Length: 339
Ligand code: ASP
Image (cartoon, rainbow, N blue to C red; front, side, top):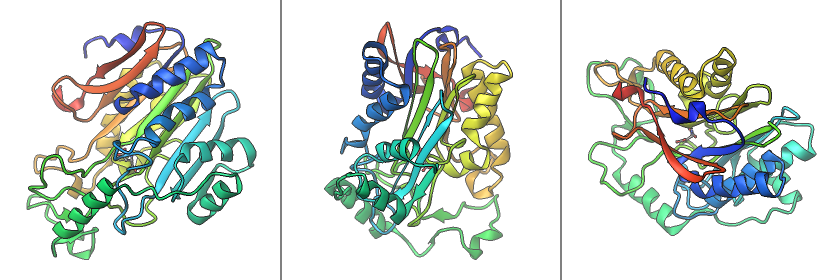
């Protein structure tokens, strides 16, 4: 693997998935110029994407579940106190990451879900609003129209599915021939910050897998899966197929690899290999056994080294956003499928 510039970086910075260019810029300004706590800064940073109707993988404008309801997952972890807060399957709230931060700051709990999370948000003065945009509603309607009798969750007909045959048509995966430009996405934002005094925080927020079963919780709000922060070592976050990340504790494992001496980029790669090895569901493999799913990991080490890697991406590698004293930029990390 070629040297990755982020692995030799040192000092304060903020990193995020590629949709977080504006988020890293804002969070970096907050920690660097205004002395914000890193958890508060990353939550404010991802708030830009949560409120953006054009990002159909996060917050307002996110693609809904199979019932046409936007259900949001978010988590945040604060390095100095090693405390985490998260919400799952939260409806009608524009900024789920802010609710997760409230859980962290004002309760003795880590995670609130569904109706309880909404009641908690309401009690804390978060206004309710319809999170389904017209564009997302139309995409969902199109998905419903295109659903065929052969589209399943993963029912008994598929439990003995022959991996050498056609893969089953899963309801939440784009069916063959799904038109370009019509959203059928996975996506999420993870954002992590390192302050000049060496404190860390990480936050992940998402509308989750599009057209998921109502109540499905992905990796994003699961501490250790969708993000993790260890103030002695670093942070990590995950984007992509949440079930695979949960089953391998992806973010936790990435931090443990950095603790063992791996650079951030190496740590992401090692854990992605492990995720692929662990994910034995045959319907998630191509006929040649290559993974049919994607995961991106993003990692930030306590000294300021950072990196990202993914199972697959375009020919330039997997993009991610960085901001430090040199300014904001998009960099690219390696992908397993290109090597
Ligand atoms: N990881 C998210 C989930 O599984 C979705 C994504 O990042 O694409 O809910």
